[in-house]
Image 1: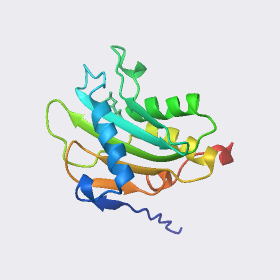
Image 2: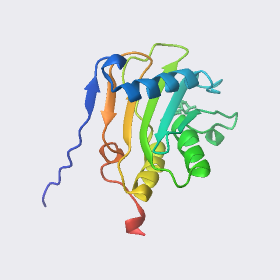
Image 3: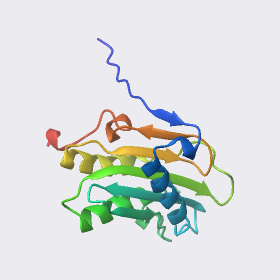
Image 4: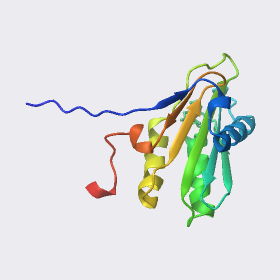
Length: 160
Ligand code: THU
């Protein structure tokens, strides 16, 4: 038996003003669109802004449903919109922010497992990394240089 270790890493920015200027703008758009979340059940609002290599910015927020599993996370709302409307464009960066109506989120809030898997599909398809920045309502912002840091042992088409 041998042990296998996988190392992953992130960068942390203390405040939004420390981010590169284009990412500050992207995060501001994610914060704004977070208000559009339809989250009557969880009261947890997620906003996402995606920068494409054609200059377009695609936005998304979580959309819930009385039949809970029929709802969709903000990350997938945004990335599926990008794939559906700009299939030739590469995704450069994603900014994610989440806030709760019941308590202030201060920790960086990462995309859920299903969203990581969905983002992975697009990163593999375009063969270039997607930078992912994520935060709560306030506080530190984490940066992942690639989706691979968030999903290091991923399932993808090479196993099919
Ligand atoms: N949610 C997202 O939009 N993204 C995630 O990565 C995690 C969770 C949404 C789904 C649901 O509407 C609410 O947050 C609570 O789980």
